[in-house]
Amino acid sequence: MKKRKIPMRKDLLTDTMQPKKELVRIVIDKEKNIAVDPTGKKAGRGAYVSLDPTKIEAAKEKHILDRSLGAKVPDSFYDELYSYVDHQKARKELFGDK
Image (cartoon, rainbow, N blue to C red; front, side, top):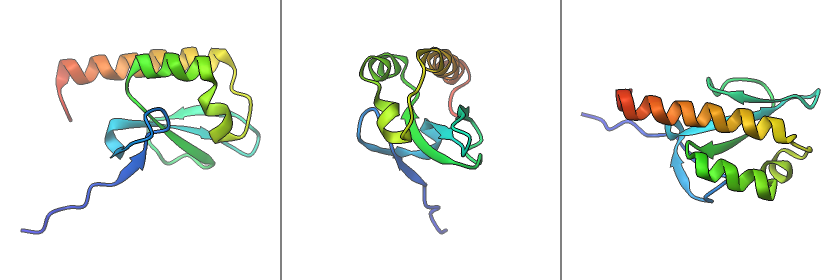
């Protein structure tokens, strides 16, 4: 039986390689719109962050996404990202890995 390769991505917040499914993609398009990309298929430059709300708080303080995406990320987006990540983490704890 052939073992499937697991796609890995670099987590912007911890600077470690992790399985793509354990991260969430943040994307910026040509019009400089920044959004959470749960499907991982939106067009634009992407950055991956871990599903850890405490790391999102630290990223907000240091404005880590600004450098990676090449644009000023508003604090309101960090708040939106925090609530999304918090929700996903709670789902994972409730339902396990799916």
